[in-house]
Length: 136
Image (cartoon, rainbow, N blue to C red):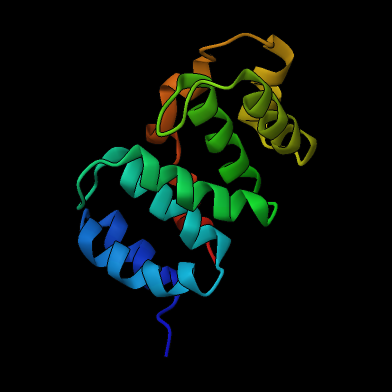
């Protein structure tokens, strides 16, 4: 039986990132876009794992391909900043537009600014806490 997203969120909120990863991994592999996005964050930040931007991009892309607006924004940032992938302004703009169209507020803010090195990308994962309690 798969654990619930909330079990992983509780572990993550307690700073037990290894347990959060262990609980979210089967959900992510089964296609849960929230779990995929959080695994991206865990790998990008090196929380309970070795920091790995390429792995973060893989998880963000899986969720982004399902239409997850936060993952789309984080993937845009990875392309914009060249983290785990080469800098690709066209890919960054594509993912940013998709996220903004879905109402992702950081994407909308940055889409209007239309510059590289967006402020909200640079603020990054520390602004992502809202995802932990959102899941499902």
